[in-house]
Image (cartoon, rainbow, N blue to C red; front, side, top):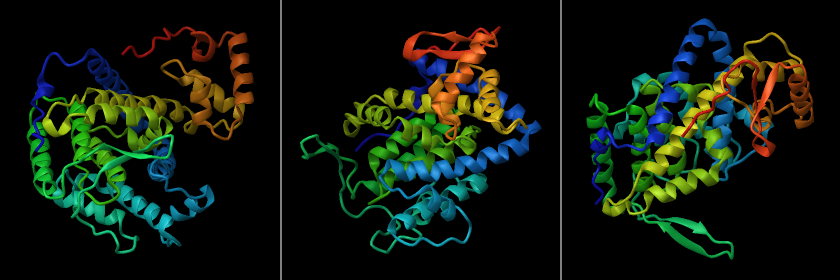
Amino acid sequence: MHIFDYSYLKNDLLPAKLVNLTSSIAALRVLSAERKVRFMHAYSELERIAKIESVKASNAIEGIVTTDARLAELMQEGTSPMNHTEAEISGYRDALNEIHLNYRLHDFTESDIIGFYGMLLRYVASDVEPGYKHEDNVIAERMSDGRRVVRFSPASAEETPEAMKQLVLAYMEARDDVEINKMLLIPCVILDFLCIHPFPDGNGRMSRLLTLLLLYRNGFDAGKYISFEQRINADKAAYYAALRDSSAGWQTNENSPFPFMVNFLMTLYGCYEELDRRFAVVSTGRVTKSARIKSIVLNALTPISKVDICRALPDVSPTTVEAVLGSLVKNGAVRKVGEGRSVKYIRDGDSGSELKV
């Protein structure tokens, strides 16, 4: 069975990419904490938006989708699901709400993990038991020719209870070790959870709920205001590639967690970066589309692309974004960084330095 030991995170020879990412995230976290004290109303609005995006994205990753109109209804308290898809969405909604509101009352323990799984299945028919799997499962991949191949064989049903016990104990030991950076610990724990795959269904969604729980409990709350799940969904290929690379050799303790750690921290960094941009939108009283675009660009701490702006303002057309950016460049308010498809924009007079990893 896999040996759960996170002492390697104390190694001074960790990849420079991870060190750079943790430093960048720490800087943006400080800025966010300072703003939150002064502009709680703006953060409350961001949290409302993020909850909807998280419920939508985390389920969409697993192919569980509904219309935006119906999703908005399901997010309202007291709305009952009408079918299996809505039952799964509603379960995620409830578990997410519990983490948002009461994460301090929960921890990464077996009882809490199983409790959140029960919430996830709350509205689903009793064909799935709210507990660890009783049969072995596999992670399969569908090939272009329609064939399915086994990509990964998780811990067996027989091994799962002991594996989960060891995972929780290893996390608690590492959590209490002052020499281990909790920002590096969390993705390693989530990777091991995914490799155990302890439940008969819903392991992916559970991993994202537990990610938020661990982040919040360790002081990284960007996911409350910018959907961590949405950023995964936006680049699922990179996420699954990192998971595939880091799970190879897991059973024999020969895997490298670093690809998954880098992807995880890039996602977290993206949340804090996006939080900076969206804060500019919800905290300003200006409501025209042009003013919202200008607000995002002029308040961004790092260079921002047209794609970034369109993602933050889904109701604004790319043509409008291009026109406003062109105007800002022409009058000298912003300048371009890079060329061609990789071009970004930054307020003129700033260094325009980007995260180097």
